[in-house]
Length: 370
Length: 209
Image 1 (cartoon, each protein chain N blue to C red):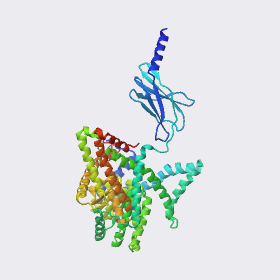
Image 2 (image 1 turned 180 degrees about the horizontal axis):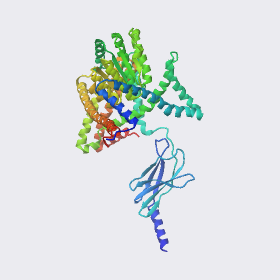
Image 3 (image 1 turned 135 degrees about the vertical axis):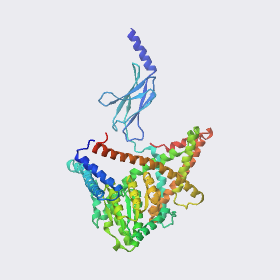
Image 4 (image 1 turned 90 degrees about the horizontal axis):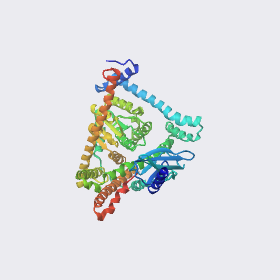
């Protein structure tokens, strides 16, 4: 009689305070997770999450605290059906939820990244528009960068001293924008070196960069009518290993004692080693990279440093290549848009503190990405 | 003192000292270590390329598992060697174009998201900042720094008047940032040196535990 009474009480308790869950396919993923939501929680100590695959038993896959309501199961296989049940635990009592079903599916488009898409479309449009303008022959103004004046000065210095110029195109691949910019500048440096009959040494770490650098220098020598002065052996490959390459370039600097060192392109931890060795040999040094952590080393150890985008600008300025000019111009206008967005959004967000303008608080959501 | 009797530890320690001797100046020991370093690294790269890429990703799938689809990347890879033949050297553009296209497609959205969208989001002045004056002032200074730095990197106009002053402020902000980065990286480099010194004093000479 007592047992029956207890069972009856528990049944009523369960019905009144029943635990309910909902299983959802996690949005914007590759079909590799399901979201289990506790839609009707209970006053329990914690929750246990159970999962069941077809033809198998329920297994415990995780726990949630009494405050948590959402569990993401990322150990699922796409397009398979899974069943879930949550058990609320309070002291020795257990409360079962309903059984929820879910099938993880892949989404073709991640709607959380629409802002990224919009941004890329706007930037691409600007860049393409200015490239088209540059190709039509329209004059696109780019201000002169102070570091560029030093290029001629540096080549002249090497000529006067009768010493070589060392051009290090970084350790990046040919796909790196900084390497491409460096190779454009190399072409201009090579032209000046050819005109002044100064030796130009170009040690390379990447095979493809070596191939391109070789062609760039050779073409530069031909363009200024000095193909005879081009020496094949001066553009050479050393090794793929970062620090072995650095050791070899250091060796070149102390043995050949170049009057001018150019460090332009992508650099990592070797930047300070190279720039310090070059400074110790007394060479005039011009550096430029878009690797922000390496810039401080170049700034302290080199005479001129092209900071980040200045490297691209220098490359565009020297080569007057429509593709580079247009890209730089497009990026400039992109920066203006960013500036505008930053200032206007900040102002509107601050205004949203007043009830009349509370609608503006939603602006921040546009910048949410996942 | 418990000097190591392991021949490889000795070789490693001596080569470390040879490289350190560069601090004194160029010398035959440094030259010796440098040439070994370059030679070994080239050989190592070849071995790594074979064991980590060519053999598991091409040879096994193609010849042992019969995955003929792998002929496509193999062909693209072979095109890199076309550079050695004058008449065919243009073909190198195909794999380079493939790498650039694929690389840009993967990198641009990720970079845009991390370097632009998230940076904008983090730089905005939000109403929450009004609750704490110190945070609000810091955020306003940060936003001012961002505006000035962007103006410094604006190349389409000559820097004159207000834009010149703002660009100058921008370069000050940049230098402050570089200073912090410099200090941080120097600390990391010192820890690398400590690691090497530990090797010499502990593993080689056995002077420390």
